[in-house]
Amino acid sequence: MARGRRSGRTGRGGARARRRRGRAGTAIGRAVHACLQLVDLGTGEGLEELMQRIEDVLPRPAIILRLLVPYDRGDVLSRLHVRGSVLETEYREDGTLVTARVDEREAATLAAFLIAG
Image 1 (cartoon, rainbow, N blue to C red):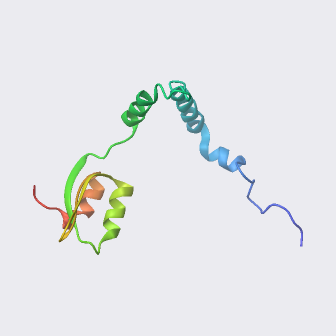
Image 2 (image 1 turned 90 degrees about the vertical axis):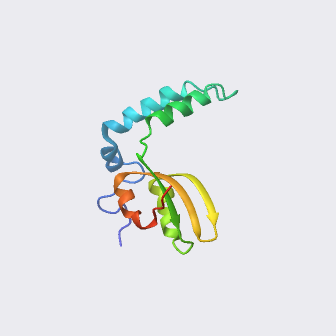
Image 3 (image 1 turned 90 degrees about the horizontal axis):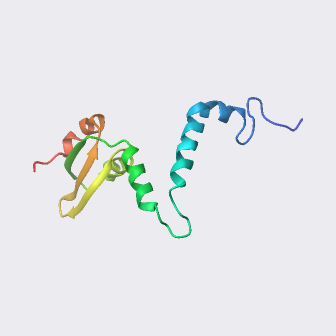
């Protein structure tokens, strides 16, 4: 049996990976490099400005919901942390009260857990 690379694979970081990355990968790399020039790694000076710039460009879901999630529905809480942004969490006798920011599509799937106020 001959040893060698499997068909269609180019190894770590090969041509396939470069093709997927395309021009956007290099543009993002340049942007990150430019932002990192703001931070002095020795003193940490400029770190706050960098964090603010990153926060400004990250997409933010638009809808804020208050949800009461039963304790046996941990999957819902996990999904909120992955697909949204959890703003507040309170553990109550009847479940977890969560205030979260989500997009429209995710909000539709959470209608059963909505509470007033």
